[in-house]
View 1 (cartoon, helix red, strand yellow):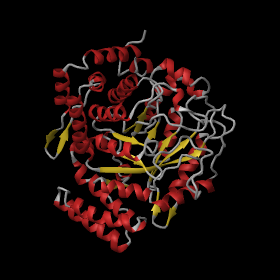
View 2: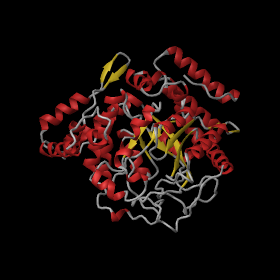
View 3: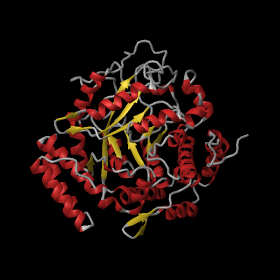
View 4: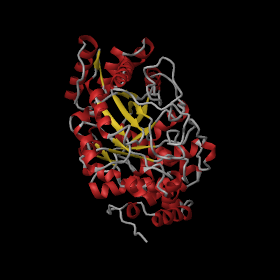
Length: 482
């Protein structure tokens, strides 16, 4: 039997089933241990150091105790601590992005995804490079600067050469004042050599969802295709980092398996990356299973309610304070609004999950991967964020300045967010307001920028940022960054 070892490169060692089950038993036994829970909250509190904060985080076992706790007064303390940590590390900025679906051809048999190979009635599509250009121009016309490209696993239809060509096309398009400045990639597990090719193509984050960490369940949910190989899939992030990709993004699909098992496995994966590579996940995503073509989430009996979902987000934020957290348009406005305070730092806006969906005036449904719950435009989302006192950010400066991997984590942990990411967010918001915003959104946005400029601690940085905002507004200059 495999032994738990976070430093091992073998999946069954660092995502060890026996360790997870012992963790869940421990958490259940201590779910009402008030003294222990209070001590964990104290351990995880932000401690001011110089201009920044230090957070100790929690282990997967400690965080599982918080998740198991059902004492209302302590749960309120858990939520409050998550809010504190979110503000300490990320401030009130929310980074915006959009998914871009390149192809839904897929050879896998995943039982929860409409792209599975046996689905014969979904429209199969693959974008040509001209179609990629039209999609990107449509996204640029909304105001997007950051994309996450998606494609099914099909070695013949979607080889790495196709993905690389699409990335090159995306980066090459300069339309009016628009440009995609960061392309994140969500494609199937692959080899070190191909990860190195993605790195050389200039990608931002490599994202791969585990779907479920329960190996038995994983094998049943992925009965056919290359994705059936649990170990190869689970070890993909190690190969990506071996290939030079600094920033990787984890995630599970909540609803496939018991959420407490998935939570522990997700945190163990983060601990493994830190132990082996010296840097944890750049992002953690928290998608929930949703309706899609020929997929009924009610067929799966592990769904979680909104309150449990919020608790999961809060506990991840406490356990892994430095990581970015992503919520998609799978979730509705109310769920997303609550999640923003508890730990989410990135959201998608104006998303379409069909292949070729952005170039169509009417949202197409024939090739969607899942139903979109939040169907508001990007402009509506931007205005909504500001009304909730969040700064919509289109910033990609860290990626383009080489602040990735451990260098980004150092920035995050050093408390320089207000002197770096904060002004960058305000300058990119100014670009959006000038180039794309509706009058109603601009009316909310400019006063916010003035207020938030005043919060930049360093006087020199504050002055430079204010001048850059003025240049953006009055001189049609773009792409300033710290």
